[in-house]
Amino acid sequence: MGKSTLVNALVPDANRAVGHVNAVTGRGRHTSSSTISYRVGSGWVVDTPGVRSFGLGHIDPSKILASFTDLATLAEECPRGCTHLPDAPDCAIAEAVTAGALGEVGKLRLDSFQRLITTLGSTSV
Image (cartoon, rainbow, N blue to C red; front, top):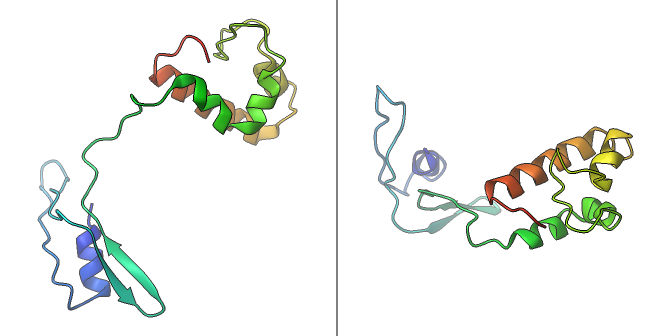
C-alpha cells in the first residue's frame, strides 16, 4: 500500500493516482491498474498494481522440499512416507535440527518449510 504515493514523491511528474487510507480500517484501496517504470538517477522505480491475493494452490507439495536444498539433503535419510512435520517419527530433518546441526537458521528454515506444507495440506512430500 502506498506505492503510487512513493512514486509521486520520487518522480514529481509521475502524477500517479493515489487513494485515501480509511480512518477506521487503516487500509487503502488499489489505485494502479497498470505497471509503469520511471528513470530515477542511475536506476529505475516501478509502480505496479497491488496484489489482491496470493495463493499456493498451484504448487506441487512434492516440489517444495527441493527448494530447501539443505533440508532436502537431510530428507534423503528419512523413512519412506515421512511428512517432515513435527509429529513425524524418525524424521532426519527434525533430528538434525534438534541436534543443532543446522544452527538457529536450520530451525527457522524447518519451521518455514513445515508451514508451507501444512498450508498446502500435504500429507506426503
